[in-house]
Length: 124
Image 1: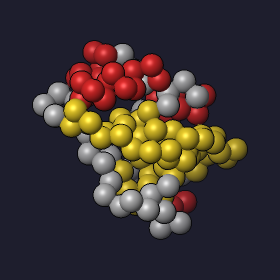
Image 2: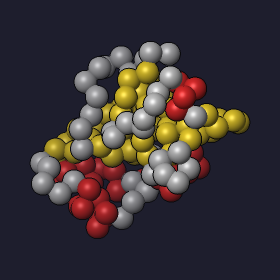
Image 3: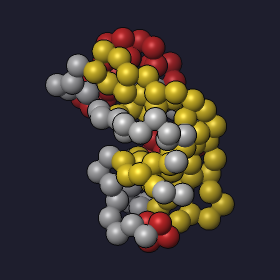
C-alpha cells in the first residue's frame, strides 16, 4: 500500500537527489502496511514527480528526533523548530530508495481532485 504526500518542491527535489533522507511529519499515517510514498510536489509544480520506499518511521521527542536525523534532514534547525512548534512528538519517514518518474503525473491520473493537506492513502 502507498500514501500520497504533499511535499514542497524544493524538499521533493532534495529527496530525489538523495540529499534529504528524512521527510518530517507532525502527524503520521496509522496503517503499518504502507511501504511506499508517492511524492506530490506542491505549488507551483503541482505534479506527482516520483516515489520512495520507506525504510522506517521514527517517532520521537522532537529534540531527540532532530539529533538523530539532522545530518540528512535537508532542512535547517530554525525551519525544523518552526514546523514542530507546539508538538512534543515528531515523526521522520526514512527514505530507503527514491525514484523520479520519467513522466510527471497529475492528481487526476489517480482520480484525485484536490491535493491532500498532509497525506492520502492510495489503493494501488
